[in-house]
Length: 265
Image 1: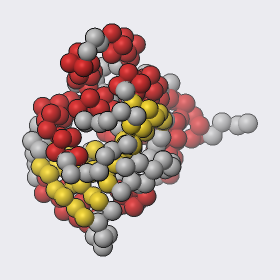
Image 2 (image 1 turned 90 degrees about the vertical axis):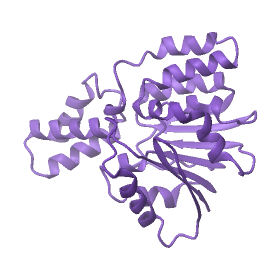
Image 3 (image 1 turned 180 degrees about the vertical axis):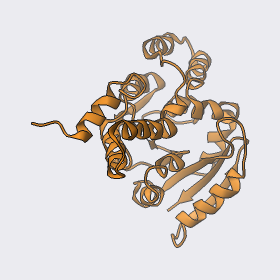
């Protein structure tokens, strides 16, 4: 079978150390978008890599030492040591690192007043499942995690049992696949801004389609560089545009690094 220009582009990106673990479906989608603009091949590769950096790779800093991290979690002698290891690991991902200073408050505040949680759906999860020790969950909780990094999902599949969780982690480009599990709570933590860089309708589609009666939706209140730039006001307006006309109960929470909405549907 003759290799198409899109096949060549996917191969060129997927052999790069920086992007080779990203879901091939997402690489293909972005590549097709850039080629459809009439760009030259090298320019299309560069533009697709740029977009992958903005929506994913920018949150990863250096190599992720999955085997070493797994050993640390396996060897943790007690809950305090497990939490310390989880926090140290989450510090390697920019999104979860931002949440570390508020983690003691974050889930106790957002889960307060909810019925017992037996299942969680974590979409575009990054390393957030490692925050489970702060969630105050009872035993036998099913945790379903989705993200675009293949090696990261493999790591989380080995990690979930160490955190006392059932469930699984799966590779999924949320722009093209829809998780089928039903959960008590769904987490869309700083997810929508990333998806909407590729597809402007992704946020609305995801909010309407997620299978959970309670959904936590969050947005950053500052850039990764620490600048606010009116981000809270922007995302506040945008969120209410997304949920306009939906008969959902909405609670609003503001933390130092994150704006969160709790939807009950």
